[in-house]
Amino acid sequence: MDNRTIDTRLGANNILMIIPHAVPSTDDSTIAPMMSFGQKVAEELHCFTIINSRYKSSIVDMNDVRAIRKRKKTTDDFLVRIREFKDEIHENNLLPLVLIVQQGAEGHQADIILGYGQGERGRDDRPHRPTMAPSMLAKIRMSLEDNGLGTAIADTDSPLCGRESYCLNQLFRQKNYVDGFYDPTVRSLVVTIAPEKTASQKSAAETGRLFAKALADHADSMSLVRRVSVSAIETSRPRDLRYIFRVHGDNPENDMIRESYIDELARSISTNGLLHPLVLLQKRDGRYKILCGFRRFQAIRRLGRQWVEAKTFSEEDFTTEDFFNISLAENTKRRNLNPIEIGNFLESAGRELGLNNARLAERFGESLAIGKPGARVSQSTIHKYRKLYQLRERGESPEMISDIINDKLSFSIAAEVLAPIKDPVDRDSLYLDIVKPLNPTRPQLVQIIKLLQAIHPELYRAIRNDQTRQALERAVQSSRPASHFIHGLRKAGEISPEGKEGEFSSMVEELRKDVFGKKANKQDFKITRSARGRKKSLTLHIRLQEQSMEQMVVNLIKLLSDEYRLKALHKLLEEPSSS
Image (cartoon, rainbow, N blue to C red):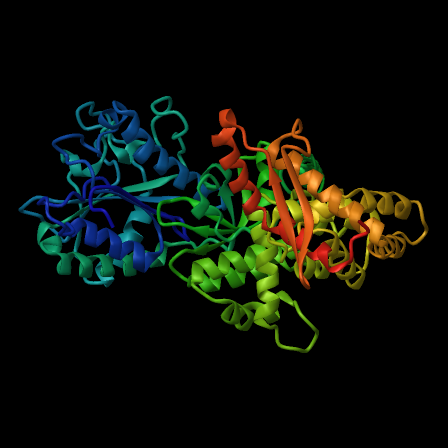
């Protein structure tokens, strides 16, 4: 961890520990003893924690609210974070106990000196502003003493008692001092530790361990499902959404569907409340990321709510694989995942955990309930789901992806027939022009693809073919469109020699327009059949003009690179010409 920072940690109880100054004594990487103390307390006590190891007291006194408020950055990073943590404790029906911990100077009268705003009544120079009941203070002292830490109460004329109005200890007692902080239910205490107790990292950590053990008696734990500030949930960075794999609709066509769904969900939450809490991951920086419930979070935010119920887990308590399992279990409680969400999950888990398809099948196949019932999930099945998601991630075939999500296209056809088609133009044309209007079965679609490829190796060109379009127009009018279309394609394939000649001429004309331009004629470009002995071949006729020689070279390169159509012309040589 960077030593020059304001370290904030989420807690699981009502205690908030603030260490205003824990700056390392040197500029090397050595952790300052007060930082070691604070980290140990946070680790043992699981309390909310704010530790300043960025600003030295000579730059800004983080014990003095006046000094903090002079800079917006210190206000946002320090004061605002204090308020957020205090509010979260309050929202969970607990009374905050704020401990302001600092290191003392030489000549300490005890291991720990405690100040609770005590002064003298009627004395303006020593005002009496208590922040804790003496009975509560006595209990804390007893717990510290029981754990071997001697205690004393700060003198009323000492700054260690925390009675000054600008002291952090008075932050929640002052009306109209800092907006949003006045809260007389907060109990706060200045804790000053003898320098010998934090002389080294080792002694500071041991003191922290004993301190945490003593304060554990006064910590009221939060439940697993707690109220969390909506503003503390982050969704702006990809790392914050690494476990989110639910999708509804797909860009760009289904933005309206998604918006409609969120509005509907918001109305339901407004009427019936949040039936299922979010599942959040506590980050060390005092924020949360979403494990499950991204759309519920969007609906809550749309309603303008400040707090939301959530089941929370600590980032340090589980492994990444554990979190994927938690997210999967929570997401499958209410409905099954669609194929794109399964692919999204597998892609994310494979990338984050470094797992290949075989390992993904082993780890998550059973939980995802994919494949044949009672059989082990194969890595080829995993590959098909990931292939579908990759189409979505690249932004290809948006309508196809949307129809998969909305159960208008079967996974079998999408993953096993459409996704393996490499060219997105071929895939989109096949889906939009053939699959959607004809709704063929998987075997029928495989048959259609073979018949189309016999017309032209590039599917989108085969679909644009006049005979294909005519067969398609007739098929959509019939009661069995897919079967009718297959019959039409077969009939088109049974072309007479004259028909073959027409197909040959049509393909040559198409090449002429695509390569040499729409104004080119047969004198500019022509391909004819020729035969030498038994071997048939093609002869290329080109008109060369001096003023267009360079363009002709470019056109020839373009022509020779069109391997699909040149091969298709050669294939037509197999049938005898009518000429």
